[in-house]
Image (cartoon, rainbow, N blue to C red):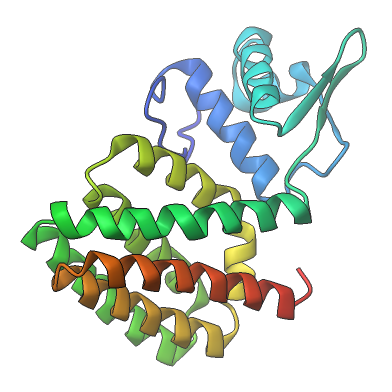
Length: 222
């Protein structure tokens, strides 16, 4: 079977259903499937080299996440992520990212701080050269490391999903050199506060970082 590049799941990530679920979800979030497009079990099964059963199970799970609508006796259709959904996700993230940074002050290790320092160094390097694809990957890495450093697997899981849901938007916002540079500076300030174990400041800076992203999204009309 094709080796899918799959989004990490806390549970069921290595099962057949889990792999199919993540592949379909990634394609929906990436815009491969458009809003209101029908998701045909046979077609998807053939594309992924699986039977209809894991596809059907994955579609039911995606319906629970609000990404798919299943109409009895008719089929499954893409709901996707709307502009309002994106705004809501970022508003929720602004609070949770702040909490995450605050908790990281109590749990982060020196090894994690070193890893974050390396991410910031590479981000600055690629920002100066306009390497947008690498910047998105490094942005992912920075936030993932902070999520892990929070010491809460629940918070890590929720924020990882939210981060993944808006990846397409993040690619667009980070394509602006001014935002990419500012985002890197905001990351550096957050890490500095965490390094000094200043939970209150880290929380405020992380919250501000997401609010700045919301403003950037609004400025671009997304």
